[in-house]
Image (cartoon, rainbow, N blue to C red; front, side, top):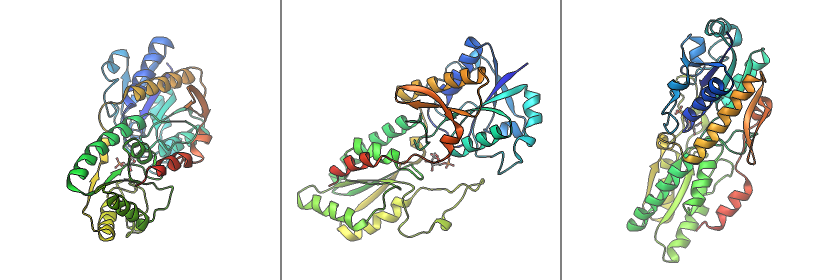
Length: 341
Ligand code: F6P
């Protein structure tokens, strides 16, 4: 019996369950193919930890955050020897095709397994919205909305206390959440990894606002901007060697305080952005991507990723998605800058 395997890898993201539900629903009800879910990303294949998924096992999960399959950063090439260490367990599960829902690291491993001969389909996932080849990733809309709501709330307390408020959002190498939520929340400055920042310019913006009688400022900081005091090597890593970011705004705040004479406070949004229920946009995008991946797997297509292009879902080579990351459009940053200060 030939079955499709599905797994979720890397950091979780609102909408993962909607993809799993769509993969299962479409495969079982429409394409007449069984589905097996591997638990905790690649670890589920390496450790022979899987579960049969039928229509009933994916009921009630569409709007639920996280992933019913669990996730991890274990990698088949960093922590094992690639397909050779997986084939026996894939055979035991009766799986000859794999739908891999993940971010850049997970998709790169899927691509390599495809090169080794495994039948693989990728589905791009990340709140960071930084995967090349797709116009948007699911989870980004939810995370940006959460960050916008936080900025709205923090702005009112900034105004009440005459403070500079720094709101740190996720975004390792690209500042999509920062730019989206920053524009939506009317930020007075937005720091993103793609654009080098100058603290004296931000201080000038804050001071200019004070001169105009506006005694508070809102600064959005992407977690991946350059640290003013630490170098890359000093960053802590997790059990899988993945750099742990978060907290750069705490280094920036006292410097701004010194330069402006105003009290500066920090809120790091962290995992709040990644947890909880997805927006309707993310649920629909995730459902469309999952259904498309199921159809591609049914047709035994391999080495591609389901992607959003304009309003269409298309299949693009995994090579294209893995060749680079997708930076913030400079035109978007230019629009944001109009309202700095
Ligand atoms: O890649 C998505 C992401 O949410 C990043 O923005 C963040 O730096 C990272 O995951 C955090 O991951 P972890 O769960 O390993 O702390």
